[in-house]
Length: 313
Image (cartoon, rainbow, N blue to C red; front, side, top):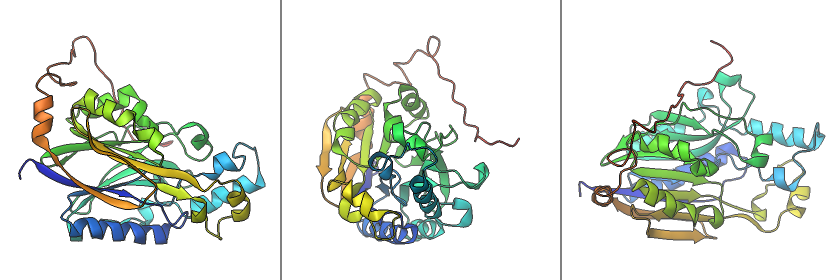
């Protein structure tokens, strides 16, 4: 069993824009995964406290809009500030249950003044330590109306024997150089997290697996019109603009040869458990290794700036 890692894909909806209740729900799924002897459990992009679906549905680009300002302030109030201890309970749970976690958050970091939001993918190890906070390099399209551009500080991998795990947020997985940065750090288990929708994962995940000769995991969230809470500003207006489901999941796993280990699963909350075998990575690296024997660093190389951005030096 030394080649085997058990992973869990938590395809769930948040208690939308309620940090406290969403943390409780995440904790329940962590416990469920730990009860099944899972080594790593993964949650979708921006799950805590939720994805900004109103931007597309409620004229998010309207400048100086009272509606958009009120909603954004509400979003900020429910966002994650690591420095204020918002993730302490989840870190304690990871340590207690000896399970690693990848978690998609909307972060409000104090090192950028404490008033701007970042789409951050956070890795918590089995001893409950936050080992990386990867702020999405480029928010996608309307996301830029809510989230700020991140930096390369979190472009890093982690040892989770027998694998080396790393991850990217959503459309960062389309960025060839971001993927290459992860491959070059020994990644052989690639985690991609998404707000939801099968269309994002069904074509790309097998391609990344073939390119990297790694296991590639896609974990997505869910969101339906019934997930809009009454305390959301302009909740009725949002419900009128929402057609039932805005995120249908699509969580999946591809093997290092690009075949499906788990095909995309849609329209249901589920903790998806599977085992992956590191021996399969070694077999596929025999004929192609993107940062090893099939690379030409004398011809092609990549510079990565891992410095955490700040306005103060």
